[in-house]
Amino acid sequence: MEQRLANTWRMSVNEKKFIETALLSDLRIDGRRPFDYRNLTIKFGKDEGSAEVQLGQTHVMAFVTAQLIQPYRDRPNDGSLSIFTEFSPMADPSFEPGRPGESAVELGRVIDRGLRESRAVDTESLCVLSGKLAWAIRVDLHILDNGGNLIDAANIAALAALLTFRRPECSVGGEDGQEVIVHPPEEREPLHLIIHHLPIAVTFAFFSFESRVVIDPTHHEEAVMGGRMTATLNANGDVCAIQKAGGEGVLQSVIMQCLRIASVKAGAMTEKIKKAVDSYNTERALRKIKRHTSSDPMDVDRGASNTGVTQNSSVYHMERLKPVSEEGIANQSEDVEGETQLSDKRQTNKVNDAKNFIGGPSSWDPYSKGVDSDFLKASLASHVLALLIALKLVDL
Image (cartoon, rainbow, N blue to C red; front, side):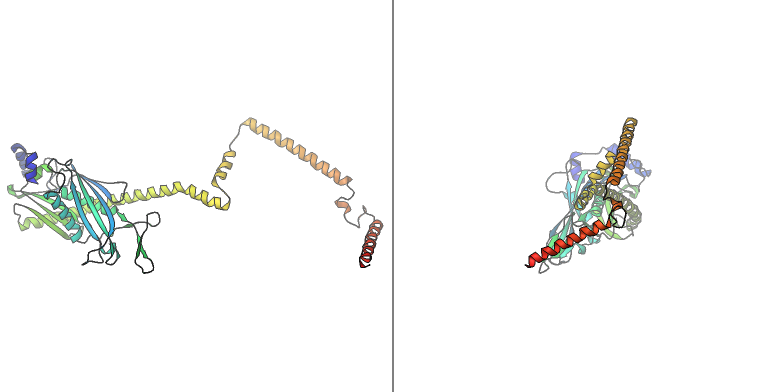
């Protein structure tokens, strides 16, 4: 990478001397101390499995996708995890389009070794049908701006994207049990990847003068450094991978000191990543709740329409019960008084009609004074006699 940078950008002798003099005083050109990281910002996109990391002036974006493929013959019960990098000329003039260069290959290998060799991602859970179908997880890393220390920024972006990615749920069915059904998110909730630990890459820059060591080198410091080493550790202090990309030799004692520092930095970086992911999951859950609550009235209308009651009708009745003016109240009171007077007149007329009606309720009792018993007996006898005569005529 240094040879390619020499063709496009050269640092003056005064700039180099300024950086070296500042490091001798345990100071850096951006005001940090030797073992301080730059400001870290983690953002997530709308799509699940996308993360954007900004470490100082370094800007990296990561995308995670998955597809069903046939697993490898030597590991029929495991899925796969692959890392792909893209160095755009927009990020740095030294980056050339087309075939990836040495720096791009090195970046992908370091991150792939830290994730895959340490078995951070459970690949056995990605198997759907043994020897036939398994999920292949692909992580695409896009370098948007090269401000130095691309490995650490890309590693954080890959971890953040993997933590927020969810793959579709699958079920096996059919008569022979060999039919795989991929359920859309509307039917079944997608599943998170099983990640056992977070391997954090910590890069150290070595300088030839007085064995100076700094962490998280910038773009200018990378042009002056004599060597570089990347140690990948998790929060428990387990060493997942170590990469020494040429340069000057380093003593064993210096390497052990770097590993102790990297263990502390890995724990702090893990907390930052988990905090960012938790806030993203909380926001996602709130958006999901709001989406369901906004769609609930439609569901209520559908359920109410089945029972013959609609929510619109209740809303309509609530709108009719609005407060009215004093004149309206007075008019309503007059109308009520008029209606009461009419009802009173109707009731009095009904009472008078009942009194004038001979066959009223008071005259229904045959033992009351309003009905003559002799007349009633004579009428019943005439009816019986007519019925007997009719029966005789029928017999004849």
